[in-house]
Amino acid sequence: MIRAIGVVAALVGAIVLFGPCAPANAQNEIPPPQGKGPVVVVVSGQLGALHYMPPAQQIAALGYDVVLLDGNSMEGSHGQTLLAAVRQAQSAPHGLPGKVAVVGFSLGGGEALFYASRWPDTVSVIVAWYPLTRPIRDPTSFVGGIKVPILMFAGELDHYHDCCLIATARGLAAAASAQGAPLEVVTYPNTEHDFIFGGRDYNAAAASDSWQRATAKLAQYLGH
Image 1 (tube, one colour):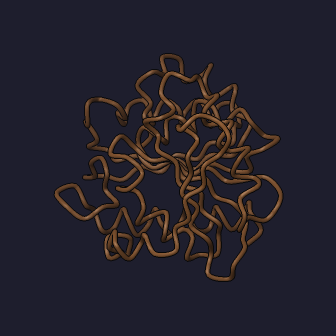
Image 2 (image 1 turned 90 degrees about the horizontal axis):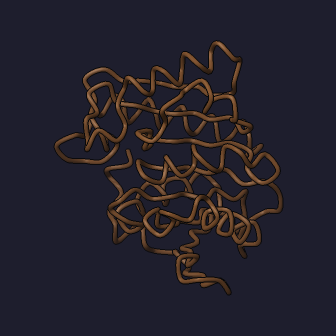
């Protein structure tokens, strides 16, 4: 399980890369066990990259070259910081050439939804755990712009700063169904925000199910 991975253990093997751009593009690369693998860009929530090192390490253990980014550094850039980071990740030392997957949590999930979902030339698939959806006022219009397959997870009791309300998730799911858009929304009853981490909001069933679905989705689109 994700919660069983300690932060100290997760830091082993992480390589810090500093690109030629602004400090916001600093990247933590976590190589796969076999040395090289398809690239997965992981974008953290507000708690920062270190908090999300355990799930990033878990993804790397599946055979992917993970590039972990701090979602806080991307706010206000209208996707440009994320796009630069994705392009930089495509040449990561332990990555295989081709499109990347983007995995986002909370704030980082919102960045993935709003921007990476519009980049079919560089992004193959998006997985978003309890993503920020508060800025979405018109689900129908938003879904109409999706060009990359998305798997999204939402807790039905999520009221964390009203950032990721279930009503919005359901509105997006309904719009996607009506339009045939490549957005799959999985919701979990009796589940709050940040449910994959140990602590007050941890939900073992939701964490296990979402992890299995995410693993299958990444394998489907990265061919790994």
